[in-house]
Length: 68
Image (tube, rainbow, N blue to C red; front, side, top):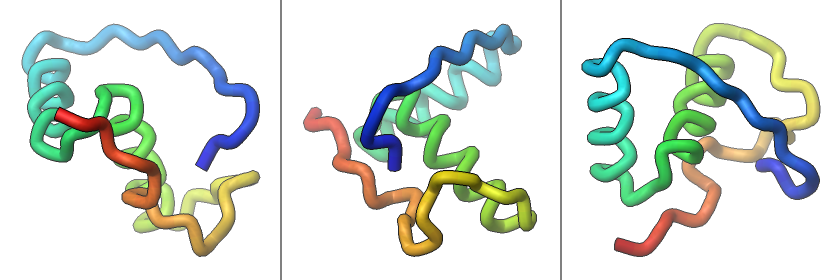
């Protein structure tokens, strides 16, 4: 997906939401940041939200996974 400069996003979530995100990332062998990126892309594609700058043929799972 992102091949150039990246942006920082800081958010506050309830502890159970953070734990769920961490568990999902571990299950997929991804970093938390990459898991969040995959989830946002999947949501946008499923709900018709435009993804400017993200090629249509780019799949959310196309980014290399982190090694365990």
